[in-house]
Image (tube, rainbow, N blue to C red; front, side, top):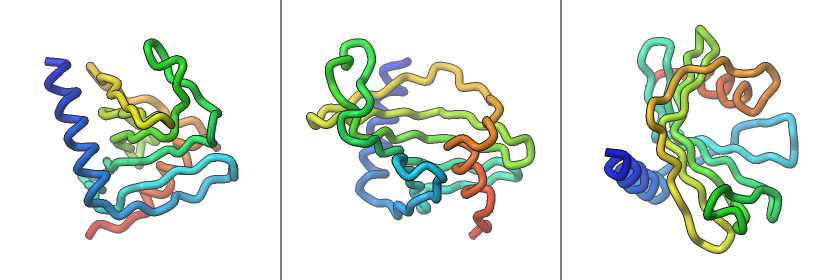
Length: 134
């Protein structure tokens, strides 16, 4: 089952990377870069979900486990935000490394968690919750 989910996320991420409308999300920390794929935004009541790209400064973050000797170039996350409750839930996460390799982190049972004030998650929540339905 986890292999099926991981393969599905990989295929989704590949499709997202090829047909997308990436725009920068304003952040207060200039060393961090976050982008949202506007074409992937879905809205259901107070919940908004989209693919986000979190770009790391070169040689700043290493992977974990068998990827611990590789530096992360960026991560793609599929994250939902509850605009009213100020919670988030990530149900897809793929890491891309500076050497061109990548891996998917399985998300077994994602749960809602509070978004910390003045965090990157808070900036993402503010941005996506301000979007008007199409």
